[in-house]
Image (tube, rainbow over all chains, first blue to last red; front, side):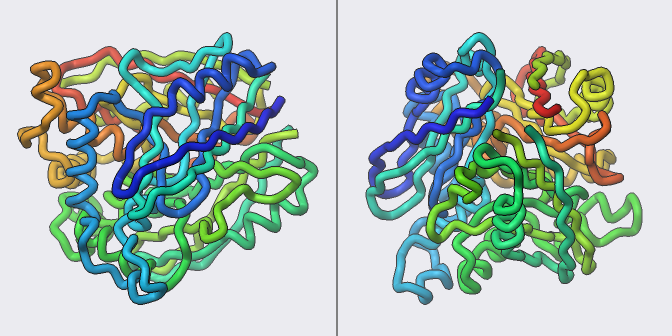
Length: 138
Length: 138
Length: 138
């Protein structure tokens, strides 16, 4: 059995990291599927999905690590292609990839106590982000 | 329902990044399964799968970021094990991981407009790469 | 069809990288499901799952690359939140993400010859780690 649902989130510019655990949990709670996995996938090429202990200090640490890997104000050849300024966002998104799969049983996500599901939106403009949930199981 | 298909691609040495969206889309288009996810997995320990806006300048930016994380001409203890020269390829592949899952509906991949599926082959020799597609849905 | 199994592993402090291919293969070998994918997911926010050619020199190279991205003895704002010392572990886990999916056919994992499945436990204390296997197929 398969169910597909779409969630929408408004994000701010810069690396905006949003906790979406509640929304994913609610979708699983209302599903006809009792056990399986949910694929959480962000459409677009400047955002990723991961998990984290969601607290503001750690969110800053993660932004700092990403800034080292692909600095927001660095030089990117991509900027020459479209006159864009979001080369860092593209590089970060490709390295961190667009989705994860999370297991669930009895309509509850099998996450660790401090493990939350997040969107990381790396884009330099505010965006309306679409997340595709595909619930697979029985 | 499940379908397994294998795709093959020839890659060049160095970090060769190939757009495989067309081949994955065609496999989904011909499938008996209408909606679900496709797992895209590369066998081997020196390549990864991700998504990107596929344009040559951005591809260069991604190669540059990977070169910072694990330089191709760096010192790797792995080189002592087999006399190999592809330590950077192994490190990059482990950090970026071997696969992704992409949702689809009505036999169409649910990707963003500029979001393409890519193989990143980090190896220092040309390779014949096998990609396993597992199509899951109904 | 879906089957969920839990595996447990004891890990040491620091970045402990453990080969779990044998345990995952055995679970697939005993499953009622013949072909499909297995989702390998680690609960908790300081560990990841990936694949690697499992040999000690390369394991050292990977630890060295992670040390560059998020040094174990670096300054992390997260340390102020709980008086913890594992900021590096959280950052590494979010960047590397909690799981992967691996295809299988005829109850055999479709891995490359040198491709092993690993837990990377980044935490600064020994842990008892739970891995959730979700086997999906027919």
